[in-house]
Image (cartoon, rainbow, N blue to C red):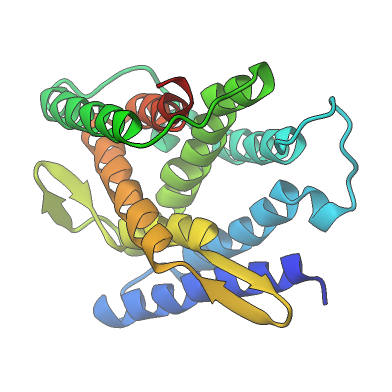
Length: 239
């Protein structure tokens, strides 16, 4: 079985186990259809992101970056967000910001921008070319925020609800599952018949994902998460 398929099984399986744990915590009061749909969506997303596990050729232009996979993942997010029982605004595809939550969200955004800039100044610059800069300015934020903090988060929120208020933002087990899934996408690997796991990557990306979920829930929009995500990727190239 191809390594990419095994990774998908491990990635989706880990999210499923976490979902079952959430069901125990919620004493079974969850909507199973939404949870199963979210897991199926994860599997489909990864299949597109890997260009059909490598069966779909590179067609746009010679590049070291996965433009095709990211564009297909983005297209999937837009299609799912367009379904009548979800909807673009509920997913967070809106420029409208919750005025009550915006001040706190802007404060956290300023802290994160300062942190990213400080880290970029401390560590040596990565350098960049036009293709790398264009990719990092667009694809990570557009694709990953729409998927993880958009359609996946909404489906998991429908499954588990949002019973907890965290610094003014309603959140639930879906925030945990989606953030762990985001962390595992970066930290989990599979090769030579075994899974690998990077604890540092898991901690850093998983925690960042929780902060982005909070921004999404606080403002009702994906705008700030997208901007911060792409800024965090690009600043290490520019400084």
